[in-house]
Length: 223
Length: 223
Image (cartoon, rainbow over all chains, first blue to last red; front, side, top):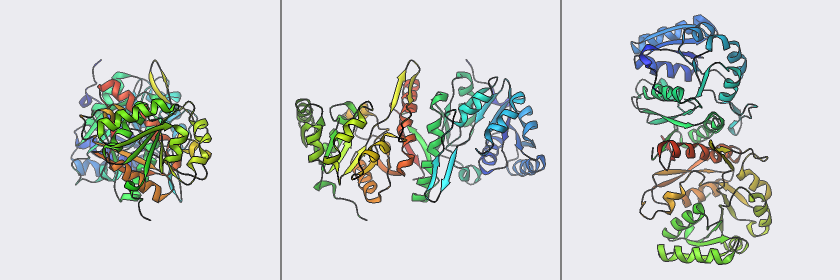
């Protein structure tokens, strides 16, 4: 199986006006990919898209999430966990046949910091897979610092992206998408059934950020 | 709070005749720490201890798990998940007042590889904490390759050990214990409630080992 040529694809980032989605969109635009940002309201998406196009010199447009999902060939879901299932289910038609990359971390927060939430389907990625039987659902980009993604002075993120999925062509393609970010390696991280712990690990990274005053990320050694 | 001086401590490794326990015991002995290996039968533990003492020039003795638990000041639990709760509960007396380091990964295996098992208490480490209310339970050493630990030619493991716990002095001490292994950094990884995903991540590392023919480990970046 061969990778899909990313230059011929439109990359949609649903929830692209939040820090994580905006940071990913920025990096993909910088890499010369065709990006469309989705948001609940098209005006906010258009404003963010204009900013990113200006900042990167890349091709970025904005639309409401449904329009962005329809326009994208590869669609990233970078929305808050609260409302994730509803949004994904509502876009099943637009997302059919496409690679859908779930980037969502189901976390709770209290005085002691972040913790992983239990998800009935096992993980956000598996929830998306259950709701999108006609899409090719992959999990990725869970552990990458939004602060680093959004900082134009960071020219080497120095981190790996674990890509989870059961469809080899889809995971290969998303690994290649991760590789377009400077200093990032896309690494196959296992099947969908092992997505939960990668999502949940973000709670640990948040604990480390607090303890070490860092923007912690993950590198896989010996790979 | 200050770290405990490791040179004055006996490090017990329950399940120290399996690859992971044996590998950790080897590295601690090499670092000049006083090590006692525990196993179900004392003879097997004594034989492994003699091998490691010979190989490392260090101080290693062997005993049944209960005796090793009684002798240890810091006690690592490196037993199979199947039987973990029973063993830990049976040693509550010997382990009272001590730092107990749970290293166990509750995983299942099938044709598609490894996957995380659901644990009623949340994680193996939390199960140990529930069964050992008078001990100071920490989780650590989940993601370190036994193959690398056991290979005397590997003089730099090049990996981090995430240390999980709610007792700062105990996690500091276990971080220092991890630091005695060449090329390993002990890093605070969060509270006990976030131990599950670190244990479960071993399933992902096993998937990566298979895909990349590697002994995958984890480095935390920006820390």
